[in-house]
Length: 403
Image (cartoon, rainbow, N blue to C red; front, side, top):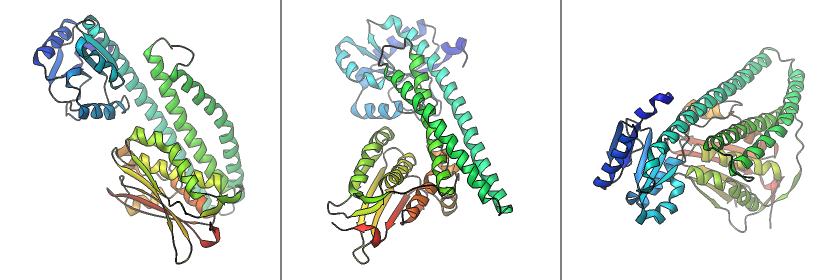
């Protein structure tokens, strides 16, 4: 929407006080906003999407606060700005819930700045939505180019069996490039995080905070691609050196869960583990084992809808002495055809991306499978659309250390 069309934005006032809502309507009309609707219900899934939500603080029930928390966690391409209006008697309550909103207006004290606040937030929202959409488009193109490149490479290798040595050299080059890229990317991540937190003072404008957040998210996504490409290049060039030691599977799972806790919380996913105290240790490469757990748990969280569950279970087969680690989720699941695609390098299930708005490289599962097999274990996966996925890591008796 162009700048001069902002006054035609659709604003929905959510509140159950008829007189209060009417006063706010009049104030918005006086500020030049012509499309203002009053509703007693907050309906983010309405057929006609609003450009801005405006809430009366008196309507903030516990259930509504939870819905607002979920709504505000969405990207700017999926949500609109939210303003709360609180009268003086509800000011304390308004402050405690201020994190749910993009601005807080005290009525009648601040009512004169309501129009300006709406105009500013709408302008920022349109610009950030446009930026996120452009960023998503460019990232998708980069991901697609990478997939097509690897598919072309596979076809060439199938037609020219004598090329493995060249492929190994290419993978070494990819690995070297990945190492070179990770250093500046980590610096960008660190500096953008500092800017987001405004550790050394205010950035001066809300737009800059939004841009810092966009830079951080884009850099994190790109770093994930680089790390995955590096992992695959290492395995294809057979240059990975494993350091086998005695590792506490229980401690490794707990440490990984702590790392994944924030992602799970932001995604509204319940994360749990069931590893018995007497669970045996494993003879394995600790770093690689933890990386596999992180990859699989990250995948499970990303492809499970808000309100879902992800768990890690440790099982001991008393018959043959093998140890099993099972990662389960009740997420979107995959059909047999989609599962075969997801297990191939750079294979991406388009249906999963459509449902979850998650983009990736298609390397998480194949890299994890190769890692477990390199460690001497077995990797198996079962999945069903709409019901979820279960991944079992099996370590044979010769890799089990009894306490």
